Amino acid sequence: MTEKRKTLLRVRPRVKAPSVVTESNQSISTQPSAVLDSAHLGDIIGAFGTVKVDQNKGRRTGWRKIFTLLAIMGPGLVVMVGDNDAGGVATYAQAGQNYGPHLLWTLLLLVPVLYINQEMVVRLGAVSGVGHARLIFSRFGKFWGAFSVIDLFILNALTVITEFIGVDLALRYFGIPSYIGIPAAGILLFLFASGGSFRKWERWMYGLIALNLAVIPMAILVHPNYATATKYTLIPNFPGGLNAGLLLLIIAIVGTTIAPWQLYFQQSNVVDKRITPRWIKYERADTAIGVVLTEIGAAALVCVTAYALGHTHAFGNFSNALDTANSLKAHAGGVVGGLFAIVLLDASLIGASAVTLSTTYALGDVFKVRHSLHWSPRRAPVFYLIYAGLLVVSAIVVLIPNAPLGLITTGVQALAGILLPSATVFLVLLCNDKDVLGPWINTPIRNVVAGAIVWILILMSLALTAATMFPTITGSQLTTGLLIGAGVGALAGLAGFVSSKLPSRKQEIAEGMPEHPAEPIDKDTWRTPPLDTLPKAKIRLTSRVGLTVLRLYLVLAVVLVVIKIAQLAGH
Image (cartoon, rainbow, N blue to C red; front, side, top):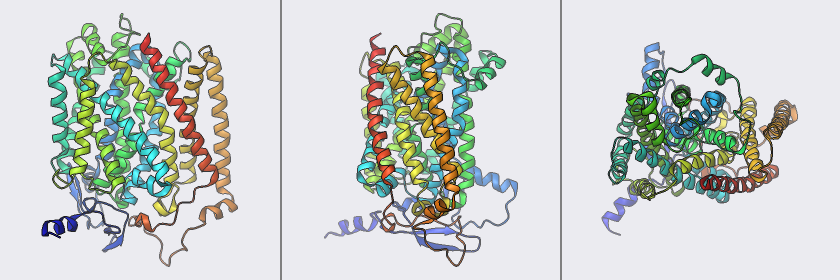
C-alpha cells in the first residue's frame, strides 16, 4: 500500500464511535457519540462570534446571554427566512393578487405549527449529532429510509428549480437575460458554500437576510388597510367558497411555509454548527425569532399585492412573479416594483442555498461521507459535487423555453404540502425514541399537538383529493367534511393524552429504559450513543400499518395533484 493511500485512510472520517467533548459546570469529559463527521465536533463558530466547547456556564449577565445568542443563532433564522423563498414569494403574491387579504389567517395558524416542527429537529440535531436522514435509516430501516430520502431528493430538486425560476424572473425585470443571469447565480451560490468556512457561509446568509427585510417598506408604500388586514388575519374565511382551486392554493401556502426540506436542513445545520444540548434553549430562541420574521414577511407580501392590485385588472389574474412585479410597477410605482423584484431575487438565492444544502447534508449522512461546510471542496469532494450538480441541473431546466413557470412553482409548493404529513410522522416517532433522545423526548402535550398538526395536514390533503375526484362537490360539503374530521381528530388526541397519563401506559412507556443511574442524568451533556450500539427500534404493528396506509394514500394524492396541475395548465 502506498504512503498516499495510507494517508487517505488515516483522514477518512467514517469513525464508528468518536469521542465527543461534552460540557459540565466544572469539567470537560468525553463519551462515545453518534456523530459521523469529525468536523461536527468542537467550538461553535457563528457569524457573530465563537462559543468555546469548554466555556464554563458560570454566572451570565444579560449582555453575555445576548452575545452567546448572537454566536449560536443562525440555523433557525436561515431556515425560516429561507422558507420565504422564490416559491414562497410567488405563492404569497398569488394569494394576495387573487384573493386579497382574505387568506392572511392561514399564516397566523401556521406560526405554532412551524415552531413546533422545527423545535423538534433542533433537539434531534443537538442531542444526536447526526442528520435527519441518518436517524430514519438507522431507526426505521432501509425501506422507510429510502422512501424518505427519495421523496426529499425529488422534491428538493423541483424546489431548487423554482428558486432558479425566481432568479430568472427577478433579473429579467431589470433587463438581464436568462443566459447570463442563471449561470451567474449558480456560480455565486457555489462560491457562497465552497469557501471551507461555516462562518463565511453564515455571514453571506445574514447579508441576504438583511436584504430580505426590504419587504417591510414595500408593504408600507402600498398603504394597506391595517384594520381590514387584522380582521382577515384573525377570522378564517374562504373567499368565493371552498373549492379545489382555493384548496390547492391553501395547501401551497402550507407547503411553502412548512416544507420537508426545512426539517432536514435545520437538523443538519445545527449539527454542522456544533450546537450541543447545553445550547438548545438558545437555538429555540433563534428558531422563534426566525418564525416571527418569516410570517411577518409572508403577511407583508400578501398585503403588497392585495392592496396594490386589488382594484386593478391584474386582480385575480396571477400568472408569475415577473408579471406581478410589472403590475406593481404600473399601479404602485417603480420603487415598489423594483423592491418586489429585489426581494424575489434575494429570497431565491437564500432558498437555493438552503434547499440544496439540505439535500447534500442528507446524502452525506446516508453515505457516511464528509458533509460539512467546515470542509473545503478538496477535503469533501462528494459533498460539493452533489451541491454543484443539483445547481447545474436545476439551472438547465429553467433555461428550457416556454415552460409554465408560475404553474410549476405553485405545483411544487402543493406537492410539498401533500408530502409533509409523512415527514412529520417520522419526526414525531424519532422524538419519542428514548434510545435516541433520552431525557429530551417529547412530552405528552407535544405529542398531542404534533399529532394534531399531522391530522390537519391529512384532512387538507383529503379535501383536495375529494375535490379533484368529485368536481361537483360543493364548498359546504367540503367544509362539513373538514369539521367532522377535525372533531374525530380532537377526540382521538384527547383519548391519546388521557391514556398517556394512565399508570399502565406509563409503565409501558418506561419499558426498555435503563435503570435509574446512581446520579441523575445531566440533560446538558446527554448525547445519543453510536447508532449501531442502540437496541433495535420498537415499531408497533399499528404504526407499521399506519405508515403503509399513509404512504399509499400520499402516492395517490400526489398523482391527483399532478392531474389538477395539468388541468390548470390546459386552461
